[in-house]
Length: 226
Image 1 (spheres, rainbow, N blue to C red):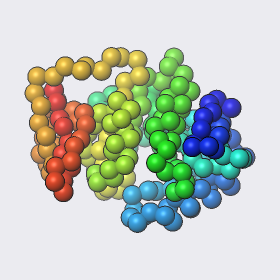
Image 2: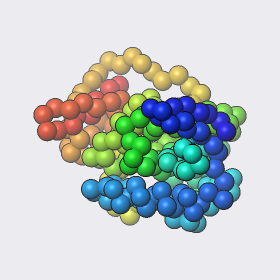
Image 3: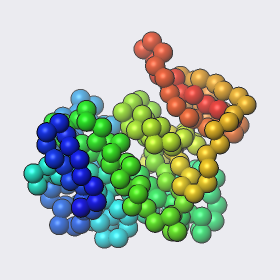
């Protein structure tokens, strides 16, 4: 056990997961997707993908209540290929790419939403990272997936790119430097509607990064600074 706490009156425990947990992980993913109105916003991991992470290619933690898995979160050490997110954030060498981890899937059972478990798991799993081996965490999020976008911004991650990935799917590419200090000062600030793809891409190309977002009527605006 690496952490514990309370969900109202229920005690939860956080454990590092192993391949023995795959059946529980598959069941939980099914329950999470089944409860989604828009099932396209979540791509579950299959048995092979779960096994790849759990065999030493990342870290996966799970939250248990009375022995039942109710939430999990994963970090992946990705293979070096042409789709590597390191290229999207400006890394170029193999040595740099090998120091990148991906924030992978994060699921919470529908019955346990609203307790801040996403953030709790984010804090706990980031403490499991070996900073002598990894210096950057990246993630991709679909524009419009508000819960996931809030999750990434709340961890101090920023938007470094907005590109078509995974066979033509538009994705924000988030990053967080684990060893350097993020620059909290900026000279310019612009808010852009989330559906204005080209304008956001132009700002990112000009050196802006996306720091946070806010609601504006029926729209969401992304804050870009440099």
